[in-house]
Every structure is written in structure tokens, then in C-alpha cells.
Image 1 (cartoon, rainbow, N blue to C red):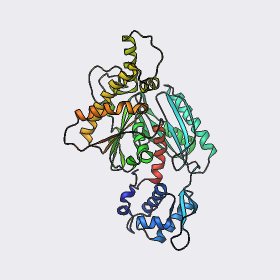
Image 2 (cartoon, helix red, strand yellow):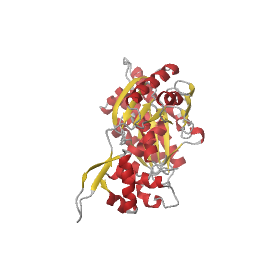
Image 3 (tube, rainbow, N blue to C red):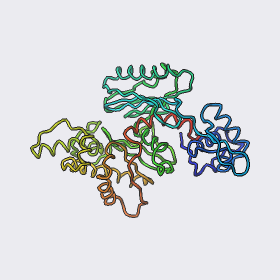
Image 4 (cartoon, helix red, strand yellow):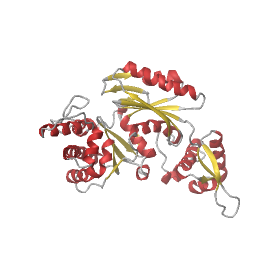
Length: 399
């Protein structure tokens, strides 16, 4: 579902020959992005007739999508009524399947998380199916008839249109029927998406203002592997059968420090993922005859932020390969912006200069300048993306 660009909204206004729903979604987006806002302001911005805006506002009020929040300042007549999204009321259930931890959350129309629960991810697909179906089912039972929909983020190959999970490489799951099982239990619509695409969608809807106003960008998700989400013209590019954007498996060398999820030591994610950072750090401790502990990537990032030399060196070597891969994306796709997401970005001050140096050295001179920036979504971007799958259906442009 394409995000409506309010900068171009006037050219998208539906005339009598097009469907009414487009105008309704545009008005809803103005309330979302510009609240508190009045009928007159919406009419002025969109160039829709005042009576048309009033009818749409009444429909949105009746459907429970917006609420009156008071009166604005008078400009000579009656004080205008102001509107905002209806918040703090459940609208979406987000399911985020992670390689180590999975999370299920309840969110409102603004994307705010109202409640969530996390649990360890098991490699046993039947166990995980039962866990997800039961936990989501209990939430659904608490809110019958409220029109909730479900979005699910998965670290694997999916076909969103068919609602199928073809392959989850981390666990080697094939043809997982989780969406149908959840739908049967809850009766709700279930939208599934690859985790990197979901994160890109989260950037599009909830990210930094610069990203929300950008039509073309690439999101690089660094975690147990590396995923890329590509936004072209305000919507996710998925490719044939949802396989687009699998740049984590592009060849970057021949002797990475860890195996890729596909088993190779040649892939980008084998050089620049979180496990690569951990392995490089452990090797440096061993080479320095220091006793190793169970340090994880969060510990290493924190140590690097405080200047511990082994952690700094492990981070910088990993950032070198991360930058090489990003350079390839820029050369091939020429995006306006590249957003880096994941726990590594907590040390952005440490890694930003190194990333820029690698990119400037390897990107061809004369190409349009691409801006590089860290994600602003915090430590749960894929969960935010799962919720965004639902919200995109409510706010997005009609295809």
C-alpha cells in the first residue's frame, strides 16, 4: 500500500471519475500528519470543496478513526472545531518473529504500542505456531468486533499478496502456514512481510521527518543477518514472489569471520552482521591472550562507545564491510537516502565517519549524492513495521 505524499496531494485528489475513497484517505492523512487541524484548513490545503470535506470528516468520526479535540482560534467567525486521530484505542496487532526473541503487541491508529509481550523464539516450527496462535488469539478474544487487523514481520522470504511464508533461513522452515492458522483462530485479516521490508515500511510511516518526505530510499537492517528494504516512489519494492532486496547475500569476499544464514562465508551478512562483530571481538581477545566471556553484541557496542580498544577495532572492521555493501547499493540503485537500522546504530558517532570514508572512496564520482543516516525507530523497528503493515492499509493510497 503506497504512502500518500501530502506534498503532492493536490494532484492526487479524486474527481468524479475516480473513487471517493481516495479523497477520504487524503483527508485522514492530513489529520494524521497535521493535527490538530480544522475542516477549513483541510479544504484549503487539498482544494476540496468545504462540503466534501465536512461529509468525509463526519464519516471518519462515525467510523471511530478521528475525534474532536476542541476549538481553534477564530479568524473572524465561529471558532473552528479541531480534529485528531483517535488514539489509545486498539487498532492493530503486530507480530515480530525474531531469530532469538519474538514479540506480539497491540497498537493504536497512531502506531503507539499499548501493550506487548516478548518470548524466546524456538527453532521448533510447530511449537512457535502454537505459541503465536494462542497468544494472538487471547488478545483477539478481548476485543471482539472492533475491526482489528494483524501485521507480521518474519526474517525470511514471504509473498505478501498470497499471505505465505516460503522460507525462514535461520531455522530452515519451509512453507510455514502461520497466517492461515492465525486467521482461522481470530477471523482477522493477517498481512505478513519480510522483516527488512517491514522495517523500511516503519521508516516510511514513523521514521525521521526527512525519511517520511522521501519517495526513494534504502533501509539496511543489521542484525543476526543483513536485510535491505527498498522504497521506490513511496512504496515497498518486493520483486518477483517477494524476493526483491536480498542484498545480504551479495558476494563481498571469500573468507568472512562467520557463516551466512545460507551457509556461505562469501555473503555481505557474513562480513557485516552482528555475529561478525562478536566473532571479530572474540578473536582479538584470544590474540591478546585475554580470557573470553559470554559477551554479546550489545556489550561490545557499549564497550566500543566507552573506548575499549578490542571492541572499537571489531566495530570498525565490521563497519568497513558494511560501508562496502552500502556503496554497492548506492551505485546500483542511486537512492536519495540510505537508512541504517539495528543495534549498531547506538554507536553511530563511532561508526559514521568510517562509513562515509568507505562510501566516498568506493562510490563513483559524479553520481548523485546519497545521504546516510541512522534509524530513529529505536530498538524495535521490525515490530513497528509489523504494526505499520496494518496502518498502511488504512492510510495508504488506493492501488
